Length: 238
Image (cartoon, rainbow, N blue to C red; front, top):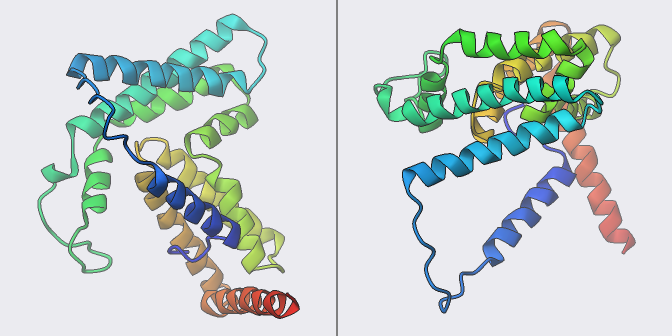
């Protein structure tokens, strides 16, 4: 949806978030923080990954400490592998060139994604096999949702708002695309990278709708026009 499917509530949330960050000021009288060594930064990062894994597994309510510890180990191993590959293979290692789809020069984000996508496939396979060895498919999906902050459901809600008469087949097809995006996205470190992976499958979804009798451009216009009309009516009512 190329940044078009963001719902008004999200836009407001992002705006408020930016305002908050902009208001954070550093007290000039505070003593400067001691710069951490590489070993200290690595140790802090490891603790963050372990905390994250523990929190994710806890949401499953497994009530089995042995299984929980094994799952945490699987997730931590994967998180660290993704982090390390990202840090050791920056986008700068990718030569300048063009995106063969758009013809535009590769952006920094595209270079980062290319570099990250060269990570050994075994990293992903070990994660998925490790999760499926201990969890049902539904539980596996819950963990993948944690990696991607619930982007599958959020994106599906956006599509349903824009295509209110979506058929069962259309919903199943687009949901399949979003789940493919989610599983692929877990191998990327930053939310910008994860969002870029979802954009690939959003484009596929919109092409699917266009190829099956829909006009994505028209549906989106109808949706945004309705939002504008509602806002205008609310303003008049005030």
